[in-house]
Image 1 (spheres, rainbow, N blue to C red):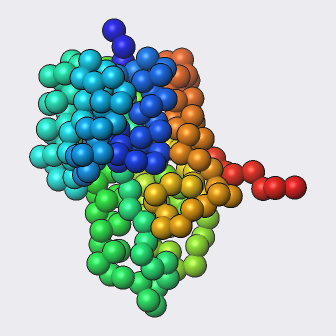
Image 2: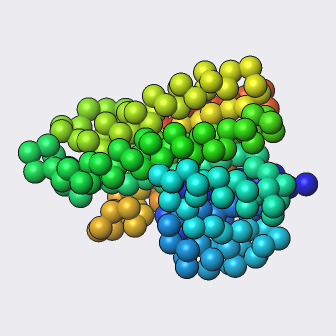
Length: 227
């Protein structure tokens, strides 16, 4: 029986690319995001309900995440891995001109929503000796002047470490993927010098493909600087 991967933030960018690569590698996928139309189209593209299901989810709402888990159980019997990929960026990068409503949204999505995703899915991950993958960022590995977004990604990285301790001895694994700049709809303008969504998706599948006794806890993935 093919394993099941639940992906939040699955409608575009890294999430959608990971879904495509996962299905190609033999996974079945549960696609979750706030954009139900894009999700439904992607699920159909990937092969329909035998392979991919979609569900509208706001990761800051526990009821939505519980509905995602229930849908996965009904369709595929459960969840073997989770890619907690949903995230939100800054509208204004600094402190002085920072948008406090945007700060609140980032904190709720990038950390609180991550924690809720874990809380909703960990019973499945523990029971199946599964895998929980987090989209972090290089912004969570270096100091960025006044960046609240960076602070949320430092927190996401720390939560990954804490989650690994919480799952210690269960056989379940945790991986934090930390990309540099990625050319996705996350940015308002194209970033041709960055990684592609497929580049990052490949690192997710690499982590998921390791044998059960191997846990890749962190992967820092950066675009190569031109000569």
